[in-house]
Each structure stands twice: as C-alpha cells, then as structure tokens.
Image 1 (tube, helix red, strand yellow):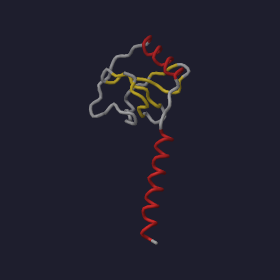
Image 2 (cartoon, one colour):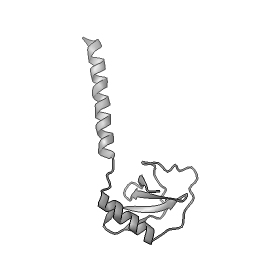
Image 3 (cartoon, one colour):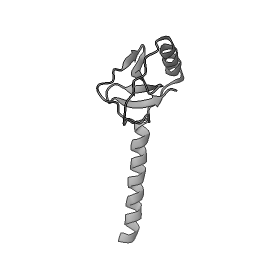
Image 4 (cartoon, one colour):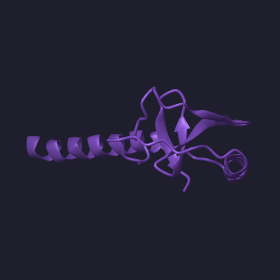
Amino acid sequence: MKIHLIPAAAGLVLLAGIGVAAADQVIVTPEQQTIIREHVHKHPLASVNLLGVELNVGSALPDTVELQSIPDVEYRYVVVDNHTVLVDPGTRRIVQVID
C-alpha cells in the first residue's frame, strides 16, 4: 500500500507546483501592449548596463535601477543592455522583455 501512495503524493506535489507557476504568470492584454509600445517609442530611455543580471522573465533588478512609469499600466519599464523590459514595481522582477 505504501508503494502506491508515494507516486500519488509525488504527482500531487507536481500538480501543485504547476498551479503555483501558472498563478505567477503575468498576462499583458493586447490593449496594454499597445499602450506600452507607444509609450516606450515616444519616451526612449538610455540603456543601463547591469553586470550579472540576466534579462529573463522572473529576474529581479537591483534597487539602483530607476523604473519609468507608463500611464494606465501597473508595470514600469527600463532599458537594460539595449533591451526594453517590463518590470513589476512591487517585486522589481521582469515580467516581459519587449525587444
């Protein structure tokens, strides 16, 4: 009986992990995408160089990086290593690499 419970428990843990990952996923609506792209195009920023920071969704930016607001969007943006990134201002984590 114990042999059958271990795989079942492992499966539940795996499914719970998938649920948490899905809940963490950020969805930017098409309307927000349009607002973001237009704002970034009209308000270009100088690129900052950050050694040791990978530009991946989920990577955190240091407090020294100044985030710029976008009207009607909860996220902020900054240009890092010539890539515009969308950042959650509460966690400072990258939610999307725009280009």
